[in-house]
Length: 293
Length: 345
View 1 (cartoon, chains in turn cyan, purple):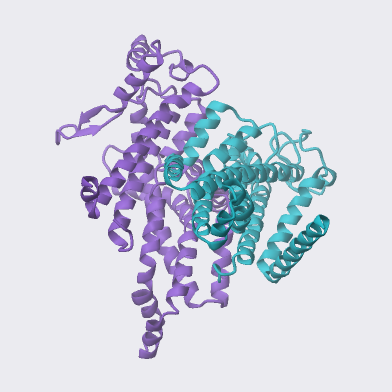
View 2 (cartoon, rainbow over the protein chains, first blue to last red; view 1 turned 180 degrees about the horizontal axis):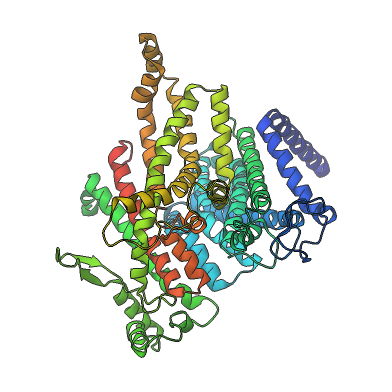
């Protein structure tokens, strides 16, 4: 009997996912976004097999694009195309992990603040406001200047600065959900707070949390690139931002090296674009009442 | 009860926001104090000027910041340093806050505040212009997109602003620099002016600055205008479905008139709200643009300070930007409370 209930539950969720996917498929921009992101994810996974050279191997510096080096070489002779391919991994990893962290912290805080209300809510919101008022870029620079330049530091710093908007949005969603009848019904049969939050409120909050996660990935990728460009990134790892850092400060301009400057930036832009499109599409699919462009 | 009465009305709202801003200011104050002291590494090293600084500077630093004293003494001295005032020289004896933020490592013996204040006007000029331009252009483009909704113009405007918003701004700046300065040689490569600064401001100097500022301003404007365009388009699409628009069309008014004289009013509130939020980024938001174009503003100074391990400047900039964000938000809140009749106070 218990097994049958579990199977029914699985079938229900499978149906739901199918329906969502069918709706999503109709969204052309969403599919386009999925393609772009899929391409970069594949590049990240299979990069080392596809890249023509080891990007850490030095060679003849400052070469223009040629049949051997499709995008030329940088100032220490590393093949730029290989650099860009390897960089996909870093940018995607940092973006994804930072996004997950950001959304996790933000959701927890938003849930607690929204559900319990009163003093807890007030305190948490004051705290959120204060973090919000600290200038994000300056704070990140200060934290990295003092904390060091490792990949994990960067992920942490991005998360520390970015969780506030998620917290606010989750909180307002929870506030509106709290008054709904199913919450009252659950309380009437004696469900505890934890049960209500986890089993009732959280699933309904997912419809904004998922698009928010995607948007946080975009933010994570762009921020990581920006920090790397300022020299705050992990200079031992290839990332699109660090490639641009070297392009700017090791003579990329004087050489008019469009092959050094344009490709990494194009990758950042398209990855961000892809995720943004997915995010918009997901938002439309999950919240059909709210969006109508 | 008395509190309720005292905080009714717009004045009460202003007071409440003022208290809130002050509390936030205190947080910035405390965070700024503890940040260098909590990080790995020797905090004293963060205050010490390099070799070559005179004994006087060392002595002054020790005295001002109490670097050999216990933590609470340091905190009191820190507060004393922050809340320093000096009269606006000569003209009026109004005390102007001029916090003692330490001495720069890199610019030997120059106080941090001086370093930052010298750069501030350049940043405000750059960002202020781009900010105003981006809102105007963004709103116009958004309105046109909303009017021709679904058509080719709309789609191209939408995709362009989406694309622009997905670009990292420093990359956009690099591309502009590459094309217009290096390839086409139309604009200078860096800096805000051709040195030296003349003793008096001549027209030639102003023209020179404008020439130097064209690319950075265009870059920032392009980058920023996506959001107001998007915002305007969404608001306008809703507004254009109202019955009075149909009436206006029936009266035979031209599209342009309808758009800009009637429908645009709906957009005012969200745009003001957005502008207020953006204003907070004026001081610190230009880091990337200023760095790429070599524009001598506060943003670039932060970057240089990081490169040169000039910790006092990094911290001072953090503090300055934090304070200006709080100020901007406070002004925005008041303006918003004034403009939006729905805000309850």
